[in-house]
Picture 1 (spheres, rainbow, N blue to C red):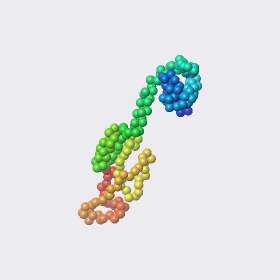
Picture 2: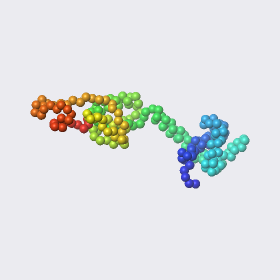
Picture 3: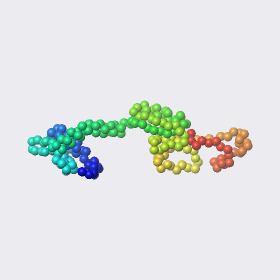
Length: 208
């Protein structure tokens, strides 16, 4: 047999789970009650499963049902997997309902020292199953390996062009002050516009 039976075009797992419930309970009606579907729908599922696999799985009469050799093989191989599938689904649901896992943050040194350490500490008290990995770095970072990045940007020419891999959001604004010693001003004059700084000796940081 070529091709995979596990595809979105041929949903089969629900039908196998129901088939296993039929053999476990010995009744289509009881299995339907457990699985939350009508007996008619359950009977149709088993028939569709047999058609998909091109083999008879259950021999039925008005009083009893008996698994065929193929049906018994399917039950014995798949039934032990059901608890693991249920556990996995529950684990995924819990992950969505309660915050847990690891958050990777890249932060400049100044922001980490003044803000981030307190924010992370308070967050971990609220969500003890969340772990943080913080990278203190002022330069470039890898957006594919970082969940959140905190950077400082100073400009009077408008917002920088956003990186296509990032979603930017402004968190806070701080005023910037231009400082110079009286001796420097006396020697080089006072700048009146940002463009005047091109003619001055400036100390600046790309990020902080």
